[in-house]
View (cartoon, rainbow, N blue to C red):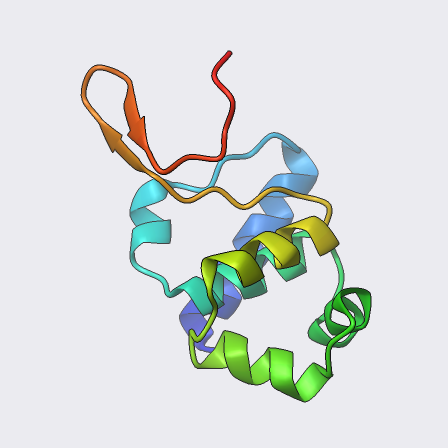
Length: 107
């Protein structure tokens, strides 16, 4: 884990303890890889790659390599999120509340 990601992870965990509804700054998230986002989600849930791989029925080494190489398909991201107790969302957002590619239901 890089020093920047480690620092971001520490900040995330510290801030989450103070405010459980924290939303990660989109500017920060735009500058980190998908794999780094997965590592942050794992840290947020207080688990590790081995436990996540076990929940997903995968080998730890295979999951770690996929995350490290940013070689994750959208379907795999949904599985990771589900195993972590969350939801993965990937979409384009345009002015006028237009969202393309979302799996989110409108309220």
